[in-house]
Length: 95
Image 1 (tube, rainbow, N blue to C red):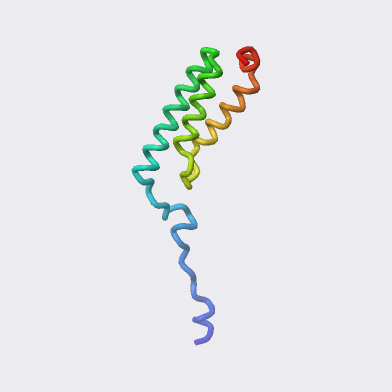
Image 2 (spheres, helix red, strand yellow):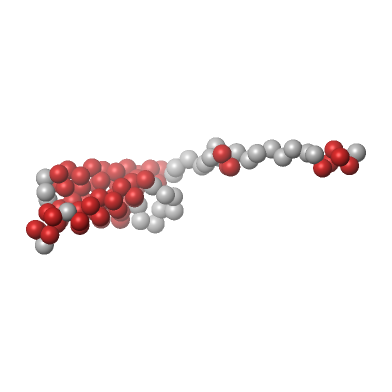
């Protein structure tokens, strides 16, 4: 009888496998959508060589998701684009 209590199998929790994630709130979806739009604009301006406006768009996108506790991939993409803009030779030409 003691053996049964020792060999009980524990059920895996759904959170351990990522199945228990709560859905995004409407506010989070709106903020992420706005940040993604800003990222697309920033990419367009960067392609045209307008680094100052591209930088402004990146900052606007980051501001849209500021304070959101969930990690958004768009945050990393905006950061990466900002780093690329400031390392580009075009950024030095417009300063």
